[in-house]
Amino acid sequence: MAVPVQVLQALQAMDGYEQMLAMDKIAREHGVSVEQLNAELQAFIQSSNPSSPIQAPQHKIDAFTEASQPQPSTPRYIDDPSKLRMRYDPSAEGTQKQAGITQAILCPSCSAPLGIPSVRPIKVTCPNCAVESLFEN
Image 1 (cartoon, rainbow, N blue to C red):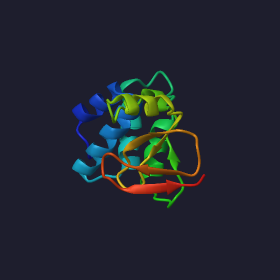
Image 2: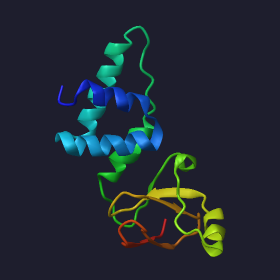
Image 3: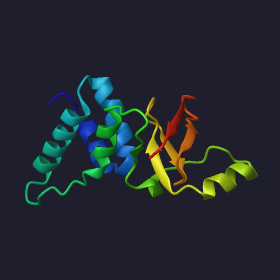
């Protein structure tokens, strides 16, 4: 095992987007791929609870797997945007814009979550890395 048991226990306690972010960080720190880390986590979960089958939701890892494979001008959607905390601009205008968020995608440059309306084409500027992207679909 390339990842310590304590780290796997901490990952097991997380869910959703926070687990995906932690897996990305841990994979980079330990020099393993996210897929390998996920396999180690699943093996750890199964070894710690062998009587019950693992029903790990795949959408948690799918969002990250898509993020690691860049596809220009094709948005990479986040399955469940309700778990994200997308509050960029506290002004009245920003709050009004945030009310129109119906979808979430990953920034093509830094993989930060971006809340967007369903209007297309849409030009998005990432608040994390300041890269501007145009999405037509």
